[in-house]
Image (cartoon, rainbow, N blue to C red; front, side, top):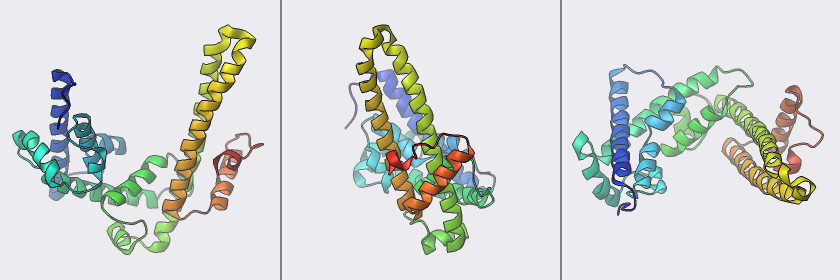
Length: 260
């Protein structure tokens, strides 16, 4: 198994990146053990210190699949990856175990900051998604006794914080889609303006395709958030409408017309 269509230099670069990621993950775990590490920037952590980032590069090499990030290494993965990691003195099982240690450290530190966030948190999506993905990676369900014990929190506090960040993340998703929709219509107008009136049907068709695709993606995100955090559709609609009004967005056509 391997990608023989890839250029040799591209393949070597990916292999070196895999080894760098594996080294980062293992070093981070050693630093945690030694008590000499602070919570990293979330973007840096996600891109440079996670098992799924490692598996993503391995998938590009055709040595793994993205689904391999969802569970512990199996014999087939060990057979393919351990020789590649041998020069840095670790196995894929070492990396996986250290990646779990890193996830535990990050999600606990992140939760501490989320508990102290304002009632309406800003830039909530990255924190919210990181907590839920981390729990999934660790085999924990949101709000379960094991999760509450890990985070040192109560069921009531978990629900309050998780739902506050879930609502804010849903709002950010809708506003982000609104901004992308505005950019899209401007770009399409530029693309079709040379055709004049005759270009309007093409403009309408192209915009509708992109709009429908964006709405479908936002709807999936909102449904995921509601399922993860136990939010009802009506309370999420009320929260989003209220924040849209506060932030000055037009609400003549409420988001639920398109998103629920």
